[in-house]
Length: 222
Ligand code: CTP
Ligand code: CA
Image (cartoon, rainbow, N blue to C red; front, top):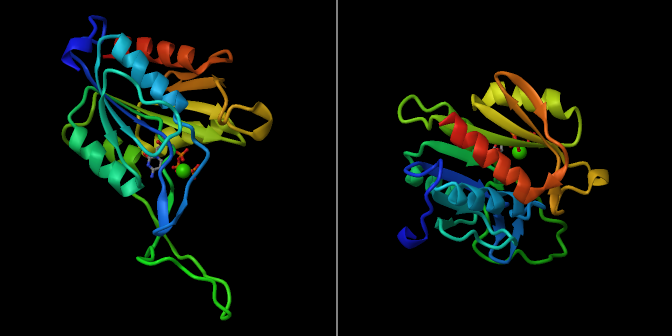
């Protein structure tokens, strides 16, 4: 990793990036997941490396390739991601692009659940820790810049603006993931950057370009 370090505006800065979905086990062979490919998170990590940052990349089981030149931490569940994030701190900036499962199965079965004549299984859920909110609200050692994502299908800006306030992060990168946008799982993204100075809509562009612009903004803010 040392050999791959680049000199740039983020030289000497440590940046955490979370990415990908999480998988929440139901039993040893089944899990609950979501459609995040991890492509945007991987692109962000690579853009941070290109700006000279030391990057800790905490990823769930994403189909996207892994970024080069990072400290790679692979996890499966939201609880594991929370632990990995805590282990990565302190950092100068933390970018939470992972699609963390909101719920896990309250008591995953140690053995495969079988079909029975008695009827259908029911799943009980427990809420996962909110990693972004936890880090945003740290009393000591909070990263200077905390950036969340908000993938919404309705009232994108309103929902993302209140999400930013509720969680206490500095910026929210909001996007519309309605099926008709084709963004979820695609190569392009159309985001709005929400900060204390308002909402700034970026034109639709490749996920790598979104990542590059975001890394430049982070470098300016640190
Ligand atoms: N996030 C997180 N930990 C969670 C849930 C979300 O760190 N348990 C982060 C995501 O990585 C993202 C941001 O919080 O940066 C917003 O995620 P989102 O799912 O949009 O927010 P939620 O608070 O879970 O609200 P919703 O009910 O809309 O899913
Ligand atoms: Ca959520």
